[in-house]
Length: 442
Image (cartoon, rainbow, N blue to C red; front, side, top):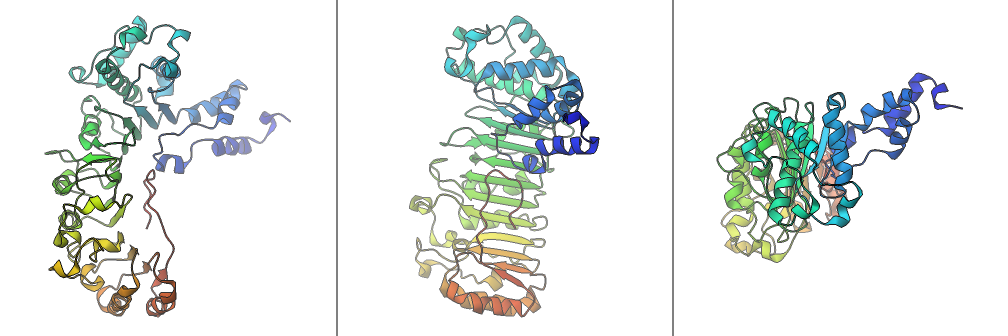
């Protein structure tokens, strides 16, 4: 039986099943590839091609670092067929470029950039990019790419071209080793909502300002997801960003203090420490983090703080008083908090007697809290947890769920009894931060 003999609604359902779904758009994994079955269906006949091709172009992967000849073909197609370019909703682009022939197979198809390519590509870029911030394309052979500077310049130009080609993108995933994007003209990306900046290596980090060339031209970006970000942009503000996710990062005290200025209307903040593989600088102390959060007390609704790397050296330059957070009781809109116990109680790295401040859950949490998740809580904190339950009716009337992963199993019944009698859910399962998703864990 031919596929075309299927009811049209069923055929559409099959194509929809093979196409990018909402999870693919929420997830910022830069390894995304379309389902090969969808590609094969598109080649079957004109009817199926008309149905499948728009789906194939919703998310395109233009990582020019590898197999450049394949990516160049896609760039040429988008340049020649604006109707296809308008279908693209997400672009995955790599700002790096390698002159290693094993990745690109230049000998199969001539020069890296032809004269015709250079002319077409420059005309497209000139419409949206400030050409003083990029190197214009020119004819290039593999032999021309002998210097790292040449590869870096070409990588930046290709990245800017990739974004200039697609006028209706909602989402960008930008991967780079070093460098940044060129600067785009005002309002070049009217529909862009999500931007993900990711360092391409497992070592060292990337500065937030590497994305500024696009962000200043995208007034609607409201979610920023950074992987291995180790520096914030100074004297720059992004009032449209409501959600900031920083994973495997190493923001220090100085940069964390910039958070309220960088994203003054922030509603959701997720941060995890990446360790010395990202930066040799000490991470922002819990106290500095809480100070930044308190400066956003009128807007923040969700906060998630985690640590991927738990090496002892992360605390070398943090004294006992800075080793725990300030009370968040003054937060006005905070509804959901995912946190490690070491942010609230002095850990083994510190002498508790040297800490001038003592936090309890009752004096730490704001009245607005609805969902609380505390990991690595110890059995000697049982009374503090029970005190929270006792105070809930009067002080935390909105509290609906408490989650305590890794808490002593012998104490589960006592804790559950205290919260359940108040109609507050209590659970003990672990929920890990996903470094590639924009979805809240709470």
